[in-house]
Image (cartoon, rainbow, N blue to C red):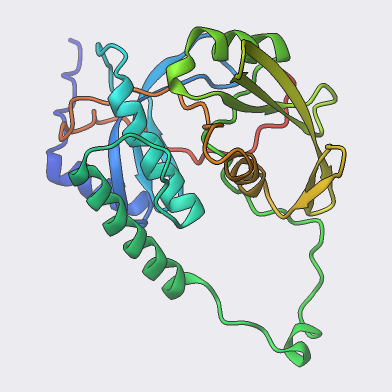
Length: 259
């Protein structure tokens, strides 16, 4: 006689289990269309933006179709928490912009409460040196583990989603920026971004060195006065649904693999 399947846990239990995974505040949630390094095609994930971390729940099925407006909303929330400023180059309704400002204040307060106090020089000398330990961090939302050709095709086929992609470099150690501009006619350009210790250098006629990849993306946006926009391919629908009982969350990490 076959054993009966265990009953599904109640929503309250699911909520409690999720609290064990992370105490980060929930800023936004919905379906997100993502192309990950271990898949060839885009897949929908029920996604939560908690703090500056994206959590993906892989067993929540989606039958939704592309929604450009929701992609703009995702872009707005991601840029707000990662750059600590409400972006001016996204098309959102007044109510959505108000939500971004509320999230911005919550994230500023969270960082003030969680960041450790500065260490005095005398105390710093007593700490062991751990130069080889690298803390996992987020990648910009416009990062895709794709090749130069694939990045070009993505920009040409989906101009409304943005015109700038961050991707792995050909040597898998550095990065490249692919952009599509329409001045007189559409043009594709590529820029190398070299990893130099803890900084990143954009190879221009006059090289520009910045502290992280978020600053690299921000540099291109500001230098073009918003004409360059991060390419974010996302959809969002069916808010408020409970996830299935088996859920998996993982941080969006830097992916060094060659596409």
